[in-house]
Image (cartoon, rainbow, N blue to C red; front, side):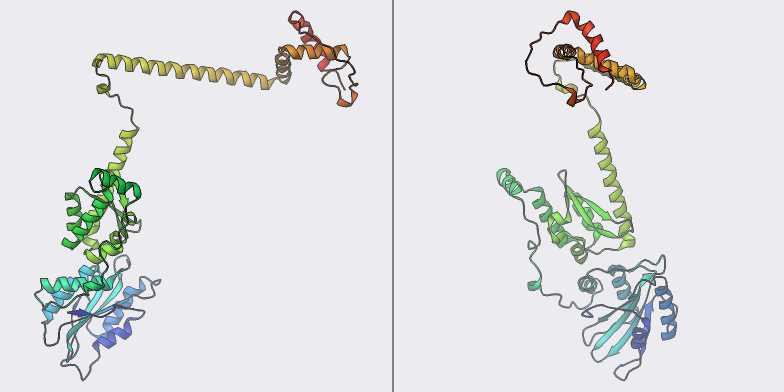
Length: 412
């Protein structure tokens, strides 16, 4: 069975519905609506129903989805068989039961086929069918359904044109290569790439893929947007988490969708549960890492009682230190507040502190002897022609301090 070379999307349902139901001399029998989930069977009724769904999302420019499935020449199916095949096909393509669709059967010289016309807008909530890489997915799904429905197997895409499995894999870093060579064990990145490649060749749906990953010690972490859109996986192995982009394009969600059957209604509950479980485990690990633990095994000669006693003593010392620091901080704050409240007291305290330095006392005495103070303007100082040496006299520091304080407040 073959689908159209490219699935079509359109702006208006009128043209495609009228084309599918149009009578023609080349038809062996008149076109007939054989299935779907719509009430009407005439062109006018179908167009009206489709337009109602499109009105739910006025922002969507192309709400029409159209594909055709054709049997090899000379083969035919009953209407019931076509409906069964088309329903399986649409479900695997990712359409829900509330996406309007109809199946119109044609029978002509080229072979029996059906036209599938669907609305991309879900009647419940107006969710839009995106259908990424849908042409490749359609080809794969048709081949799977041919086997399950016992139909003639048609030739799929030529393998010679498909990329090599390793062509889109990220290479190991130099450190990873050296470690792998030294330990003779595949690096975590290599193990993930090899295992996922193997599983993609043997599984064809998302639940089986997730289960197989778990059996190989790999934890998949779904990346689900707040809108509910699935964006891909990260993979955790041996305590290391790799994003799909770190492994290569072979492991992106776009590529995985081509090889795995993803059905949102069936798979999303499991994906949300995986995401919640992963977040919970990370939170638990973080809390354990931040907790202060005492390892009694690190003190082999000490008894359990000694460890407890030392721990209690250590806790008392920490409490005492914190208390002293708190008191010291409070005392300092009170002193600063007291000084700020009284400018004169602050100035006096500063001057007294300065005069406690020996050479400043000598300098103050020298200036006093020359009849000058610190508060005189620079221009009022005389030129010093001779240098006099002075030795600090600590016995007269109190007298000098008092004189200096008086002279410091001499008006200009």
